[in-house]
Amino acid sequence: MSEHSPTSVQKASIGYTAYMTAAVRAHESQRPDRLFHDPWAASLAGAEGERRFLQLEDAGGCIIVRTRFFDEFLQHTIGTLGIRQLVIPACGLDTRAFRLEWPPATIVFELDQPSVLHYKEHILQEQQARPRCQRRLIPIDLTEDSWPSELLKAGYDPSLPAVWLIEGLLFYLPQEAILQLLSRISSLSAPQSWLAFDAIHSAMTTSPLTRQRTERVSSLGVPWIGTIDDPTSLLASLGWQAFVTSTARKGYEYNRPVYPFIPSEELTPETEKLYHWLVTAVRQSRDS
Image (cartoon, rainbow, N blue to C red; front, side):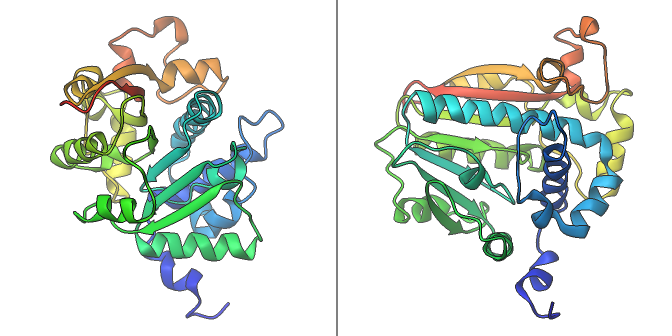
């Protein structure tokens, strides 16, 4: 491969977590009891993803659990409730448009930095992957104020219900950016829209039980800086009714225990703060 190929040129622009997430999904896909199958994850992760996976192997359980949880969420909101717009901000190397079954007329909007989408498209084209829905790419950084207008230009209809999936992002953002993103999504969402994301409680960043992991992600250049201690109240203030569980509980349900491996019988509202929240919410109104 030429040193000037899309793959080599774009690698430096793709975040640590995108490669690692793809590698985790590739490993899970190889298990006989896999919770999902992502046939393109290994190619997207490449050697770089494998290296990073080995650096932070205990992160795998959380990624596996949230992937399966959000797959089920999408199957319900789009497959059962009949919503036909899915927006994935900071989509990274996600391949749900290709690996999940979608009802006719489903449109998936993928937003991310141009370099990320360019790299992903290059790999998927090499693999001759074909999406199972309408797929519209929006190459833009979420820090740019114009991303909502670019989404509208791509055909998003704010008068119709939509599903939003924000996976593996919010804990890398400062508090102000989290609130701004959720506020903008709220302003673009019709009643009966759905939102899903993962987040962390501030206790995770200070507990001795999680210190080893938080110090390690920080040393690798991806510190957790954004927390949401009360997602239910926050989303209520923006017009959403939230439902919250944790990767700990879902991990035991899926037979994929998640670090820091507290026994299921010892899980309490306090100990669950040491795990990622898995949040889903339905839009009640446009009022904040």
